[in-house]
Amino acid sequence: MLDRRKFLAASAAATVLGVVPAKAHKLGEAYVLPEEYMPREVRIRAEFEPGIVIVDPNQYTLYWTLEDQRAIRYTVGIGRGNLYHPGEFYVGRKVEWPEWRPTKDMLERSPEAFANFMEGGIYENGPMPGGINNPLGARALYLHNVRTRRDTMLRIHGTNNPRTIGVAVSNGCARLINPQVEELYELVPTGTRVVLYPKIGAAAPHSEV
Image (cartoon, rainbow, N blue to C red):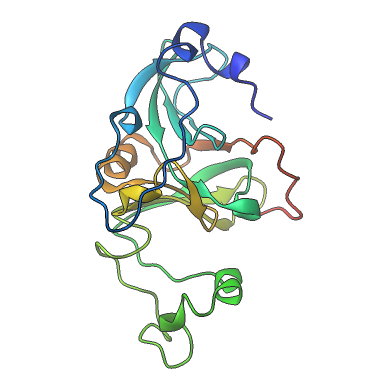
């Protein structure tokens, strides 16, 4: 469980690092990403080495750690319900405008939502090409298992829908708006350590991803 007293410097926690509230917006409403959701540099404790990615699902935040007890903080959308998988991973692959296909579990959970990938669908025999309407957005960091070195199917990726930032909405991945994931993509090299902290009060996952 993430202990914010160990993670966040007290001076920053009292000002710019408060809990980020989830905000609901109807699809018909005009929407501008709130100012508090924009990236900003913050202070962190010294025990976090520079050059790692940390996701705190309880605050809908992602941190890219820097030298001198600093980090860049982004606001993200995270996995809904029990689809969020905490743990330690590493960036095994980076892709610009990635292709995408729903996982087997996603197809079983919501076949009606993924009809294009079922028998007779336009993507029955292949992934959806990368592009502005692709669910992975402009960039994707592919998270691999530290022990097995295999792709976990978890991603840190982009989205062209800012309404999904600051809420638990995805099928397990963390998402940023496209301009911000493009920035993060350039900062984070392949092989980077990634720590996804648990949701407070959530049950432990049934299996390792």
